[in-house]
Length: 269
Image (cartoon, rainbow, N blue to C red; front, side, top):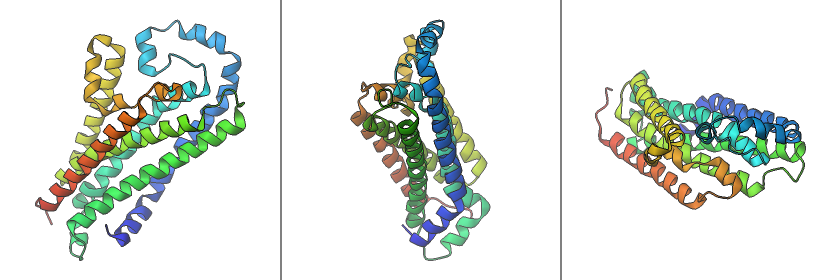
């Protein structure tokens, strides 16, 4: 890792990271502020939910609003969070390698004494740092909002909310990992983004389809999104250790392969 490069890349991407992080935190805070009103009318909401098909409720994570944890998991972590962090992970991972090659900046970096391995490892560290900042802001915003806006009987436990964000971080470490691997294979930023984004959308769609159509729920086994069940984490039913280990292994493996490929491949310098 090269500290000077890391500092420069963090400065370059700081606005993007903070934009996603603060946006995520504000959305969680907004959803939290709505929960007390919904909590007072929970019986009517449950009756409304019963109208929808079970497949739709499974896909959207709307089976239960009985607690704040279930509510925020369904209203944010089960849907918008996946889309927001998916865009961030793919976009940043592609820009960190393929983007530099495409714009000619990689030639300048390699003309210095910084090795390819140092560049790749530094860029991976930038990606991980960005994900950490976003999740710290999201966790902090959501937890503080719940503490101040929701009574203690309804609020989610610290440990459960922390686990939702940790497993979420590892999910997008895995997404960022394979996006970084794809980025290391391409010289064109647009092509890398198209493939990484398309693969992420495919995984997301497979996960949703497996939830909706129970006869083909086996297709969820081929997507990392199946390992992230915020509603089950909130209710204490998820195997957090297995999900975390699997997602972390995917992220590490893809990043290591990306470094090895980037070290050896020919670049248009």
